[in-house]
Amino acid sequence: MRQALAALALMLGAETAWAGCGAEEAACEVDLGSYHARVPEGEIKGAILYLHGFGGTGEGALRASRDWVNTALARGYVLVAPDGLPYAEGRGRGWSFIPGRPVLRDEEAFLTSVRDDAAARFGFDADQMILSGFSIGGSMTSYMACDAPGSFAAYAPVAGGFWRPHPTGCSGPVRLLHTHGWTDGTVPLEGRVLRGGDATTPEALMQGDIFYTLRMWREVNACNQLRADRFVTEGPFLRRAWDRCAEGSALEFALFPGGHVVPEGWAEMMLDWYEGL
Image 1 (cartoon, rainbow, N blue to C red):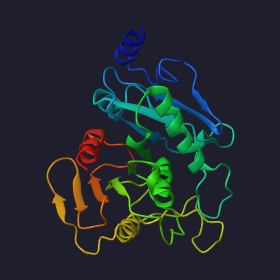
Image 2: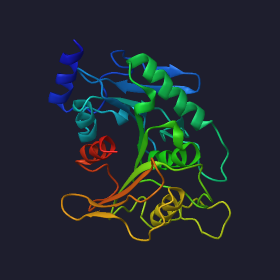
Image 3: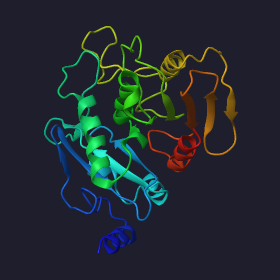
C-alpha cells in the first residue's frame, strides 16, 4: 500500500509528502517538537536531517516532487525533516538562532533529540547522519556545525550561512560542504540587511557574508594555506576544497549559476562528497 501511494504521488506530481512519520500519516513527536520522515526501500545506508527554509514545514521539505528527495531515497538514505517554530499567523515556520534575538527553543537539544529518536525508530546509526538545510535552514545548519560540531557526521548547508554579527569562534573542526547560487538575491553571497532596515540600527536583521564564513571555517579547520587545494571547473558546480587541514575535518565550497534554490544534482554531489570522506 505504501509503495502504491508513493507511485501515485509521483505520477500526479503531488506537492505534499505522502507520509508523516515513515509509514505513519501523523508526524513523529519528541519533547520539543515534531518531525517528518521518509524511509527508502531496501537497505538503509545512512540518514539526512534536513531543515526547511523560511515559512516552510518538515512535511513540505520532503515532497515527492523534489529532485534531491528522490535521489537520496534511491541511494538508501532515511530523510528526516523537523518542523521549525511557528511564526506569526500564516507565515509558516523557522528556526531560533539569530544573534541578539530571544531564544525561543533550544534548537541544539531539539535537533539532537530528533536525531536520536529517528535513529531508534528507523534503525540507522545516529553517528552516520548528515545535517543539512536550505536558506534559513542552511543558516541553522551552519550554527549547529559551529556550536556542536560533533553532533552530526557532516554538515551540508545550502543557500544559508551565518548572520551578523558573525560568530567570533566555533567549537572545533567540522566536515562541511557549503552550496550557494551565484545569482542568489534572497541570501546574496555578500549578505544584506532585511526588512528595509539600516545596518547602523541595533534592531537591523543582517545576513552574513558567505566568503567571510568560509574564511572562518578555514580557521576552525586549521587550513593554514591561503589557496584551495582542489578545484572543479567542469559540470554544474564550481567547487573548491581545502585538504591540508585538521585531521578528520573536511571543507568544500560549491557554486552553481542559479539563484535561491536547491539545485538539481545537489544530492548526488553532496552524497558523493560525504561518502568519499
